[in-house]
Amino acid sequence: MIDVRQHLRTMIAQWAAVGQPAMIERFVLHAGAAYESAALPAEYEHGEPKQCFQNATKLIWRNSRALTYCEGFVVDPDIGFPILHAWAVTKRGVVIDNTLRTPEANSYFGVRFTRYVLNREIRASGVYGLLDHGRGANVALIERLAPDVISEARAVAPALKRKTR
Image (cartoon, rainbow, N blue to C red):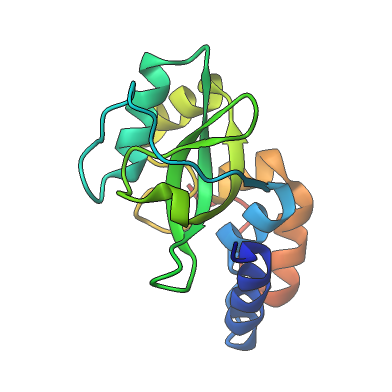
């Protein structure tokens, strides 16, 4: 499998070279874990293509006792670089990805979020997805969950506001 962590370290360094904090990459590298790839089990239906945040959320809402929402990065070996993505994960750490067609071939590295955090953030933003609401990194969430990541990012980008939401 591909080492997603190394890809994230490279991305962080590249963004730092141009004065950008790479907040999401830093947070996922700090708080994330690698998960076991697997084909989508027959009991789960595929969601809409390119709607991973919505697909994973709906999967969690239907299976909250068995699955946990996870957001982070996936690397498809045919593409070769990390893409921000969402999926569900079993208690054993096995990926349930109902968006990508061949999840068993991919490498996953991300952060588990409780259903409480998932629901709170969706209500607050009005959109699916926790780490990026389409307006940049969710700095407020990252600061609540990992304040040391914010401190590290400010060293690269001192202009980073205290709270942006």
